[in-house]
Amino acid sequence: MKQNWHISVSDPTAVQKLTQELQIPPAIARVLLNRGLSDKAAIEKFFSPSTQDTHDPFLMADMTKAVERLGQAMLRREKVLVFGDYDVDGTTATSLLCLAFREIGLDTAFYIPDREREGYGLSRLGIDYAMEIGATLIITCDCGISAFDTIDYASSNKIDVVVTDHHEPGEKLPAAQAILDPKREDDNYPFKELCGAGVAFKLLQGFHIANNLPIANLFRHLDLVAIGTAADIVPILGENRILVARGLEYLNSSQKVGLQALLKTSGFDNKTMNVVNIVFGLAPRLNAAGRLGEASRAVHLLTSFNRDEALELANLLEQENRNRQSIERETIDSAILQLNATHDLDADKILILSNTNWHHGVIGIVASKLKELYNRPVVMISFQNGIGKGSARSIPGFDLYNAFNTCADLLENFGGHKMAAGLTILIESLPEFTRRLKKIANEQINEQMLNLGLHIDSEIDFKDINQQTLSFLHKMAPYGPGNMRPVFFSRNVNISGMPRIIGENHLKFKAAQNRSVLSAIGWKMGCYYEMLISNRPLDLAFVIDENEWNGYKEIQLNIKDIVYSN
Image 1 (tube, rainbow, N blue to C red):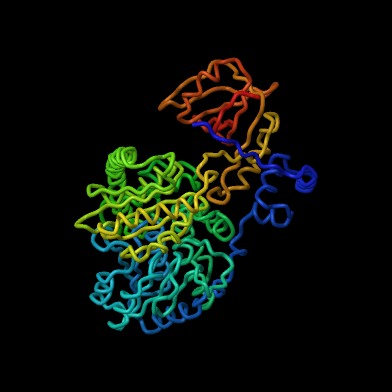
Image 2: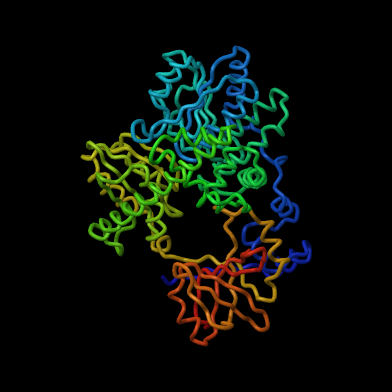
């Protein structure tokens, strides 16, 4: 599909100044300026994320209350139940709290709800389990901000609840002992984009500070925070950038036997982990535990100290992930058939699909893939016995949570944030919900939002693509939402030698500009083969990678688009 190139423009004077001041290549200077980084001190901090620059946890509303309640639990030797969501963010946050609480002497158990039986959020069954084991304090992870009835149920049974969440709150807050959520309207915490694992980490950080505990012990668990943050697709900026950068360092040398087993079974045990490896490698395997079975298996794995047990659990999740992939492929095929029969892609600005046969555990993944394929918000709903559970994914500029909030009278339950949300709906409410949501989308989504575009950070000459440039690109990592890998373009490129199609329609070739020749690969871009053998000069858009094969490393262009030079 042809893409429009949106090429960022930088002030040449500012580029020259930054190039000289920091001794960096002009193309890197343009990338930094286009991302709002023009100050030398700010850039140096950006290049070297430090845990010393994390925010004071006590800036978060209710932090003092939460820390004091934890302190009481320690003094009174209470049993604490950590209640986490079943996705990767929830299970990593749960694992983080369980490991850290046990290290400081808290008697801690955990509970992950069943996706099919209990659905999202703090459940009555979870509170019943707390009563069964004698827990008098529940700490939620990645949920709880809208758990009004269940928190009241816990209180009526003399169980206190401390909420740690990052989802959008409603107009009112539940009657918990403390609610940690940076998205609260009355919260002045400077960074609003923490994931559930990030908020759980801030609770631990606050507790360690208040009780003069060695903070280094806590930082060892940033590997779990990095996985949760990357998997939840929150912006890798600000405090998240620090937590992920340091977390990746710990992940790449992790002593957790569960993580070691997971890295081994997923084929990453000898690779340097980054955000992409987490999102497409580790996260699907951890998610598979809750999509097709008990998500508690992910927590058992991440908190295990037994190598045999960890390897058995990791192998089990590997098999579950393969089963999930098979179900996912069937669901995608079914959804596309329905979409073609019921939607007009020239007119419809949102895709709303439903079925009684779809597995609820995969509809979120399928919604994400359809969103990428059609560049439209997607709502997928799986109905059973007249009750539908749905997952939705959005495009930049369309706030899903607000759209669902506008239709709240038609929904049994909903939650989430701008880009991803979930809902529960009765089948008789679906027609009016569909009509109303389409109307909202038509009013708020314009053609510019729907047109595919490729954002280009800077032009670069092949002669400037070298190890120095690569080293600065490494400093800009970790990459992710808000700080995506820079896309460059080069003009008037020729093809050196004969290009090849390898694997699953991947394009491999040598590109030459003047006297510089670089290796290039275009994943699933075999359709461009004729352009490469046309003997016409080309403009290439690409990401600069480093390819390693049999111990040999070389700079490689990861091609994003190819057009004839104009």
